Image 1 (cartoon, each protein chain N blue to C red):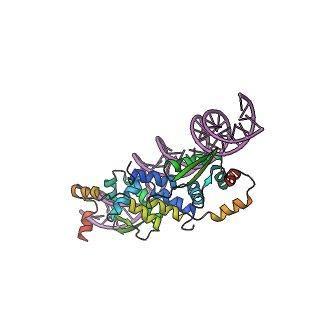
Image 2 (image 1 turned 90 degrees about the horizontal axis):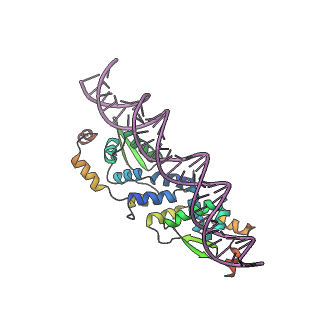
Image 3 (image 1 turned 45 degrees about the vertical axis):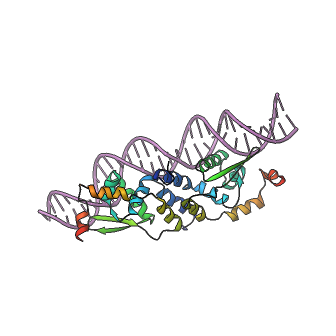
Amino acid sequence: MEIHSIENMSALLKIVGDKTRLTILGYLKEKELCVCDLVDLLGMSQPGISQHLKKLRVAGIIHERREGTWAYFRLNTELEPYLAQIIKAIPSQAASLKNYEAARQNNCCVIKVENK
Amino acid sequence: MEIHSIENMSALLKIVGDKTRLTILGYLKEKELCVCDLVDLLGMSQPGISQHLKKLRVAGIIHERREGTWAYFRLNTELEPYLAQIIKAIPSQAASLKNYEAARQNNCCVIKVENK
DNA sequence: TATTAATATAATTATATACTTATATAATAG
DNA sequence: CTATTATATAAGTATATAATTATATTAATA
């Protein structure tokens, strides 16, 4: 499928047009995060987050990095202009992320990362 | 609703993320068109086109101009950057439009416009 | 090797939405 | 005023999709 075909654009816009995925992208704008962080941040089921991340990954909007059983996701920084502009327009989730990191009770994927 | 809230972005991206509406926007990038033109160009029912145009209009993506029973639609040229970039990325429908105008059998809204 | 932990996939359900046909509205022509 | 034309709205239907719970997979660890 051509990059800028109507079909491809429609598919990509549908993927980024979901509230949950926009929020995920808002967080990933701040930093690379793992599935368990996003589960807590979004307050939804792990399979739900996993399915959203898969769609974003297959679409090439985010990249995955594996470390043991952990899966870390980050933004693809080489998106086409119209997608880059969408990411840019997403309101910052920095405050929410900071609050989460300060208050976190769990140690999901944290220890491994810090000791790395 | 704030312009760049997640909710608002999601609503707008869903509106532009539809194949039919992207195609309509691709045509409107070329020139102002009336409902009957778009019905022929898209090859779908008049109510279908009308419903799509209403969504685009209510969202502020296109503007309407009334002339008698005809309704002409054109792009809003003052869209936020991320929406403007999306419009820019839509493949040109110029060839298809030119072909339609050359071959048109109907005279839907044409005579009035030319005599105006 | 068995258990635990992190993530992914499958199956299901509920909601949203993009069409269609039928009908209503509104403006012009006769 | 009546008929016609262009467009809008209503109602109904089929498909897509976002969520959940249940289960599978995979890697680390006891």
